[in-house]
Image 1 (cartoon, rainbow, N blue to C red):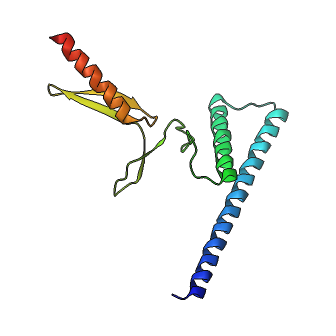
Image 2: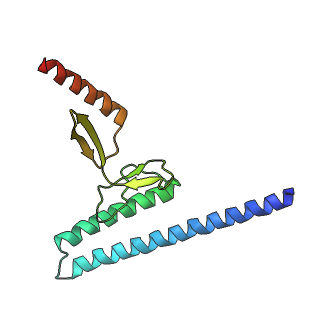
Image 3: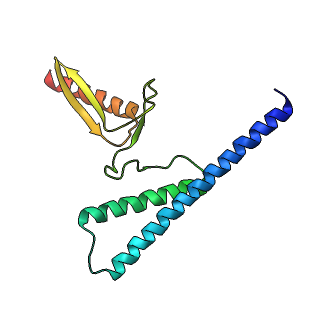
Length: 148
């Protein structure tokens, strides 16, 4: 591959990246406009949103602010990122599996004692599980000492 070919390919990548960035800005502007329209309609209309609709609107506004923050700061991660409007408490869990790099849902810690399975922890928030495991082991040890 010659140097000129490399330069042309880099220029194409940069153009594509710029177009994507512009398209993202345009989509964010559409959402901002639509949110503004909804706010204005709420002020002039005698009908109000149902509690469920108000909850969704709140989630969508938070999602918009997260996206605009990531866009302005040119980052792809944000703490407590909303990935579902209907289940805003769900967080992505990076697994590193071959079939799915990222999964969504609760993380569950299960322990086996004398053939019985016990759910120790079920949480939608991604937790530092090494710390949790050490606390769990300490609790199990103290329970054993109490039995004897």
